[in-house]
Length: 188
Image (cartoon, rainbow, N blue to C red):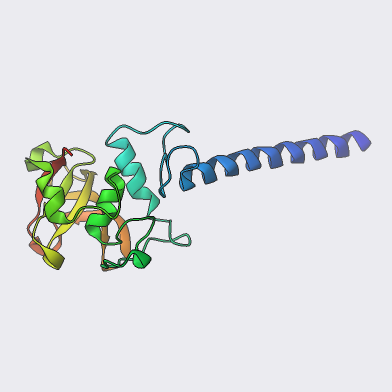
């Protein structure tokens, strides 16, 4: 009986140590401890390394899905730094700027389009952007993840919008309600 208790105690200790190691690694990754100073730095990448685009961009985009007390970062269109998250505006273009790894508070939709090249529908790749470069609240930007059908009528996209903040969801091409959006590839 003594050996069983000793073995069980050792097993529990090993599990606790493994959980502590995993927890430390997750905290360092999510807080940027090993790979940068902004929320989401290094997520999905080895510690101390930066991800190549688009892997890094999509991994950073995914961090805002659970970054706000376990839920999505709420949408806010504000020029007040007190309303930002991690140094970025909480609107669509601030969110995309964060995912691209640009300096905060980020570019607006017009600025993103100005630093990108047009991409035809059939040429869209993970990490490309769908942008309506209109100024102010008329503009919008979504990060393209992948096509959901071979006819290219719907895609999975990351976006920050007023109907719930950060989303990773099915979007009809080019966008809901036929809202005009065009494909772009960010070039810096």
